[in-house]
Image 1: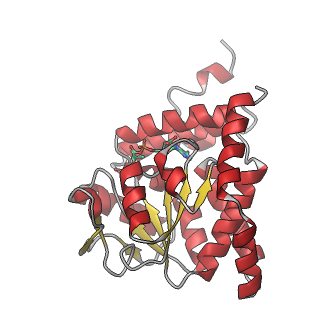
Image 2 (image 1 turned 90 degrees about the vertical axis):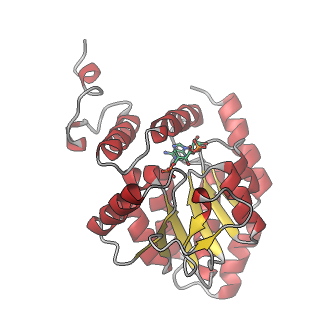
Length: 259
Ligand code: PTJ
């Protein structure tokens, strides 16, 4: 057994994972999801979702492909142009990138809203607390005084002054039904999902086929670089982005990637 073989099973703190491990990012992600389940943040189903995601990431070469970088830049431009941008947080997102979502919200002046597929008051509170521990000042999603139309009751709950009112929403690792229902509400939807064939990126205005661990910090960097851009420049970044081509490029990379 090599030193590395002993890393994966019982790491207590992520600092124990050696950064030069060939599967560092995957081990880190797995550890964060496990820790999220233990803290009551992440649903057990989040582990299945993570497993699916990491298989696609492996096939993508575990890197941000050029079309995903374009999508991340277009996403930043949409968020900067929005009247009311909202970043949606579920149990996987909270476990994987809590501080990074807070940083993105600050960079584009967006609200953060907890919005769960498997909604319970305990998980909502645990996630809101976790986000506050990572610097969030205002966390939405606790009121849940509005509904996304055409969606089964609990999964449809949103804040009237949050996702319901938003013109641009970032919905990472989203279930297909809800992504479709948000799309039908006429929102500009940015989806982060490693599976380009999943319904959520298929309905998104900006499908970001990348690991959320890489995608969110990269969106923040793009937003900071575009902070002084005028409306015309932001609109041209959006117009240059081709969603169909981005989906095709990701699928092509997955099917033909050199592993
Ligand atoms: O916390 P809750 O209750 O809101 O539940 C969240 C999950 C993720 C469990 C729920 O929304 C769900 O079941 O989602 P799905 O239908 O499994 O979709 C998740 C998608 O995210 C899949 O297409 C995965 O490939 C993708 N995915 C998983 N991990 C990552 C990812 N995409 C980007 N980065 C990841 N790290």
